[in-house]
Amino acid sequence: MRTDNGKWRLKKVKTNRYDGDQTVLFHTLSGDLHILSPIAEAVLDILGKTPAAAPDIIDQVCNQLDLQRTKDLENQLLWLLQEMDESGLIERAAP
Image 1 (cartoon, rainbow, N blue to C red):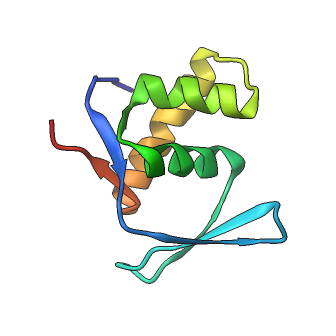
Image 2 (tube, helix red, strand yellow):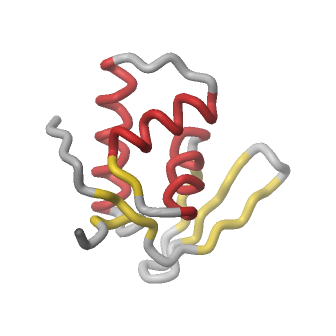
């Protein structure tokens, strides 16, 4: 999967947290509910603060969740960004 220096940003979504250990996200445009993994939750938290490029998102997720950065994890996070984009949760930020 290719990486580039383009930045991602969060689209307008509303999140609700239940029991402190699980995040359920309601996508206002589609009406869909998403149960987020800790990694997906971290990505949305990061992008909720400021747009970020994929390498920066990967670094921040690893730091936030105390994960070792591996090629496999990088690929999974790039795939997750693509999936979140296709679901309408995030989008490419204008340069």
